Image (cartoon, rainbow, N blue to C red; front, top):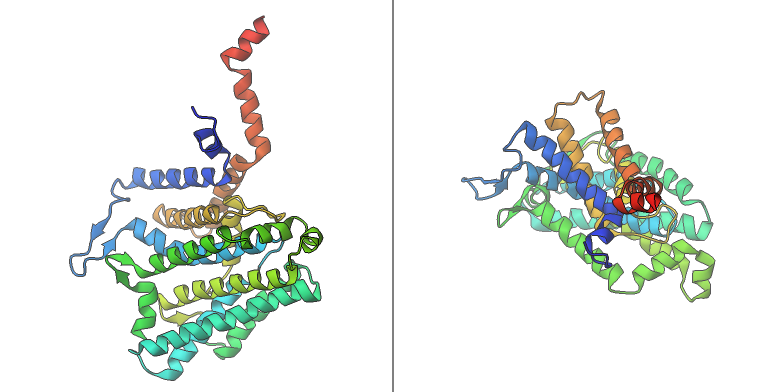
Length: 352
């Protein structure tokens, strides 16, 4: 077995490795109940792929968006509790815009709704950055305020009512297909790749990690933490807005009470599962992708197994706790010690 930096042992040390293992085990549980769970088929009417795996990928798309934004924020030593509320703001803005336009077939109106929703969430995200970097509030407090204010803003925009609209190009963003693949999955993948290229092929990723490790030292090294924090929180806001558009366009209705509800917790879990340090200074886009896929797979498994809605939180928590224990360095070192103690080499050493 290889011991190099790219070998199997190195892979096992990656925190997201256990997320991949958990996904495989959850899929295996589903296959044991229904051997055809992983089967993919083509809808003869339109040539689109259908199946449980497609459903999981579609469900993972909004979680993936907010998890990627959250990983960047957490890497700076912060947290963004407002992403769920920014999702509903994006949904409220887009639905009200489409409703006011009254044009159910205009692609220009759809682009206008999308652009306005992302502009508003980018502004609110940047406001989080101002509160953190300029005013000096703790990220937890500033984003908690935005979490409450954002959902309240959505209720003001929609007059407290669930708003529905009709626009086929906008609906296509979440429900359409390209070459048989869901558009929402392709868009989410494109956004993730774009963010990963920007932060890993430029100095931005290193600067984010430097600020998370030591803000004062990074300033002395020539990095401007204020501008960087504004950028990171703004990106998080935009990605939350994209997630809100995905969630809203799928049903063409915004539920001001339920859209994006508690998804900030799923985003934080996805980030932690992926190996991003909550202390800041380290992040993994690929790990966040694994975390988002795990949460979507877990949600699908809960529904597929028929777990009672009252027991769902406990079931989900149990799986996450087991996964976090497997990721914990202290637990892994304990297993390594027990394995070393029972190895032939160790026994021969004791006998000698």
